[in-house]
Image 1 (cartoon, rainbow, N blue to C red):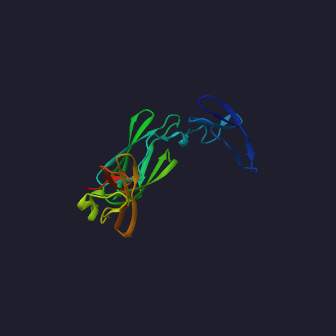
Image 2 (cartoon, rainbow, N blue to C red):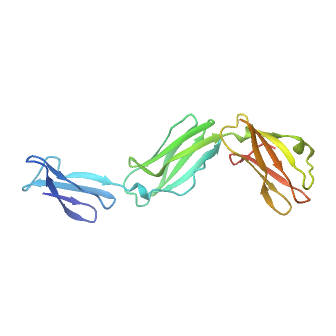
Image 3 (cartoon, one colour):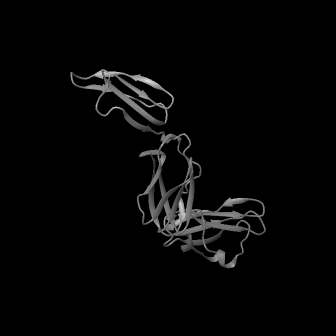
Length: 231
């Protein structure tokens, strides 16, 4: 005879004989928390009974902030993780490359944790989040560490600082030793904001071209992996 007790329920469990000496008992928890399984033969508990176990629900773990795909070298990202309804357990996070990014988790209160990711060298790392030894969803995150301060922009367009309507205004951006990332150039004109044309000309060099339809002051925002490069 077998039964299971949870915080809110007590239920009989089916016992399936496999042979004369062995039986199979299956129990699927339907709520988080502590559970106790009782197995008796006649009126006596068999060896190992009662059995205590904890049931958790990693699907209840929620990332309350977005983990950025890119981190600037030397910076730290703080990500809040809610665990309300997840049951007993602890959040753990490991980094596939601790020489690039480290990850630690601290408990801020009963149902919330804070994930701290620190970028310590350029490169790529994968972070693995688990709750009570089970991967949460999503539990794998790729992080790229870059250094936008290593980028430089130069060329005729930037030197003169003057352009004409309908004529291309161009310059070059070099990203040597800036690490992984993408180059994006936004232009804020007197009336509209638009993207400049960016073309990769070598492994670490980009050609930037823009043609303005408006007369007046234009602000050019050049970013590597979402971070502004030096003026």
